[in-house]
Image (tube, helix red, strand yellow):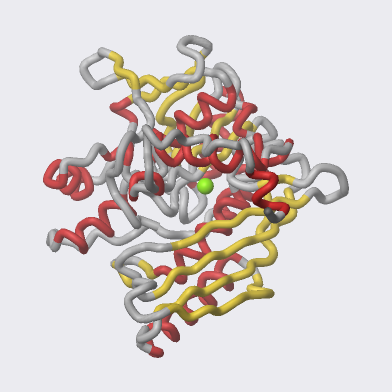
Amino acid sequence: MNQIADLSAGLACPIPLSEYKNVLLAHGGGGKLTQTLIQKMFASRFDNQMLDILHDGAVFPGGSPRYAFSTDSYVIKPIFFPGGDIGELAVNGTVNDLAMCGAKPLYLSSAFIIEEGLPMDDLWKIVLSMKAAADRSGVSLVTGDTKVVDRGKGDGIFINTSGIGAVLPHAEIDPRNARRGDRIIVNGPIAVHGIAIMSVREGLEFDTEIRSDTAPLNGLVERILKAGKDVHVLRDPTRGGVASAVNEIAQSSGKGILLDEEALPIGEQVRGACEILGFDPLYVANEGKLLAFVAAGSAGRVLQEMRSHPLGKESVIIGEVVDDHPGIAVMKSRVGGTRVVDMLSGEQLPRIC
Ligand code: MG
């Protein structure tokens, strides 16, 4: 028996066969099943101080500046969509995870897994758009890898990007830091990316095309951190949407989250599409949005600064952090009642990023 087999002897798979014998699409959906997979399968074996925080990236301890490190893979279908493509998304996504750590993104790696038969011209379009996205956010792509897999085994192209950023001075952003009274600010209308992708897949047509909101948020984050020292948490509500993001923060911080339904910014066309497709916009993915948890005393100033940035013009406060119902997110509805906002369970939008 080799050493690895030795090590695994006696260690049963932490996800019982009786629960899930095989990986499901929903294990990649960003909701409950993803969380279970990450916590039981990966975090339980690789546990360490940096990973256990379950932040958007790891912040290295010690040294000045501190560095943030993050990675993400992109398997979106279709690879070209209204408002972007898999290349732009792959750059912006990792840039944003670094920004959510309060870091200025510096260097990216990119690994391409390409299916035999992908048109060379498509690959070139993706490369051009990655370069444009990198320039826009001020990062350099400094290392990479290319693999090609057999026809029929790769669905066009998959891209992994990893990135390193320098944590901005005084930034103490951590999902455990949410405090009672923090206001939760979002930088504009939610659910746009997910609906842009689903509209293409479902062949829905609108008066004006719904385009993905994919964008690099590092400039906006710099603006936010300059405006207020009391910024406690930043999170980009990607897969699983705002609902999953606030649940993650509630769990990490042990605080309660209270959202205000009336304050949630949702575009008219997106709302209509959600109704047609049967989606709750709170669970639909965003790729150019962030949630900022800011102490009440600084929230007004931060909001004002955000609104002066091109990617924050429509920023609004959508809720606050409370001591009640620790670890749970709740929404005050338009008619005055409240309901629990759970994590996404099951699969809503596979292959959305
Ligand atoms: Mg993220």
